[in-house]
Image (cartoon, rainbow, N blue to C red):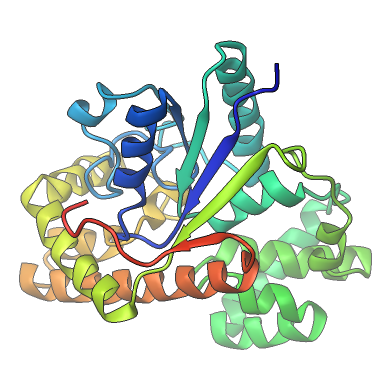
Length: 296
């Protein structure tokens, strides 16, 4: 008997993908695996729109809120954990539904991860110092001369990945993008099907604005306050969650709450736009869903 198919549900923030995944899980008796790089961290459930207790009770969920914010998970670390979860689900004979908005997670599943040579600490430090000296814009231009694809796809503000791509290109004489093309997919061809929620941009932006207000009402500000009280390194991935920086600035007295909310909504829209662009470019053959329940 063949294994139940794996469904990949991707899309930008606030598009309704989590609600769609939960609806499908209820209908087919499936289990949900997280593919969102922020929802893996504990302590920011509201800010990252993680599942509520009510939603968790409706279907088994995996890799949500399982990592302390003091840790920093890589794509490789997530892929390892996701494959363990998928094997366990398969052993139970149940369908798996992988849902999230992190494109690199889906790419790792469907294309694999490259066996990139180790880069010396010295080169990483040099690349990091260059980033600090030049600033992101100029550094990204320098990276574009070494690895134009990486310079294009890496999100704004993602210093860690920008520096890594630069260090790999300099140290190996080959771009990170070139290394990443020499991969084998983690999921066997034919074992999965993918769908992208691709809402009209105006509708998506309206949902982004409405949802961030709901997040603040639901306790996002308190989550950020608790995280700030821990005194964690600001470079940690968990503290890069959309809206975190703006709410933290308000808590420090640097902005009013209204100013923080406006800035966070704008950043949420920018993030959603980048996600839309990534999925349109990287998953052209996946099925598209252009309408969802506006309350999802």
